[in-house]
Length: 267
Image (cartoon, rainbow, N blue to C red; front, side, top):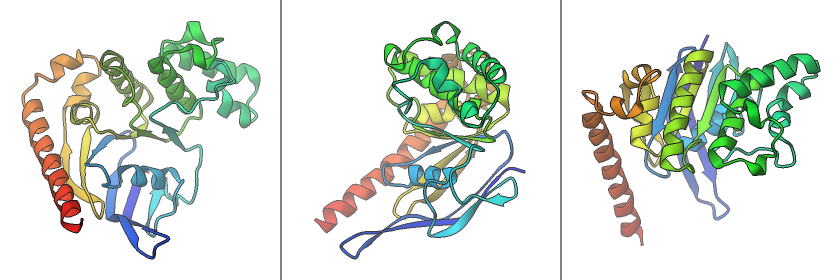
């Protein structure tokens, strides 16, 4: 039935009596299986939007509807992948991935099958007994993806999941995200500060503007579908990629300059 974000607003009241309007009247419709990337300058409410969809924050106004019911708090139907894996350091890889099914009381044989399958998909089948701290940053994010998928969520929410990785690892992980999206058919919302990443990974791309956070422009893009079984560097050479990238970069740069101008004016 998809995900519906309806006239969402979020205001944070501060101790000094002032308030910050983080989001204002944001509305979106996502069909099942869509991959949407979200861009925008700092302070435009990207993470606030994601946290509301995750159920971590209650909006000041509006609502989020998933599969016909209102989101009122965290739920396994929505999985979250953070910038850093947020893994359980005291557990090995296998125990991290099967944590959700284990908490649901799933029989060991069944959850072992799910865990082994997911670790094979993310290329970590030979590391399942390793401690988390023994893994590289990229491998930890693979564990985080597998752990998220083990709960079989309808929607995967990703908050800068590749931002802390080196360039080569980030490119490999971008390919993995696309592979998992196609193979699982999950709805994905990806927050990123990288315009190129947003273009590569988003069927739809939302550019948000700040204060208050709102949708500034939306793009429908062909690159994610093309990139699933292709060299990502070749996709960046496709017609329209560079022009769209430059257009969005200019758009965000103008917003940043406006924000800086406001700050200087109020100083």
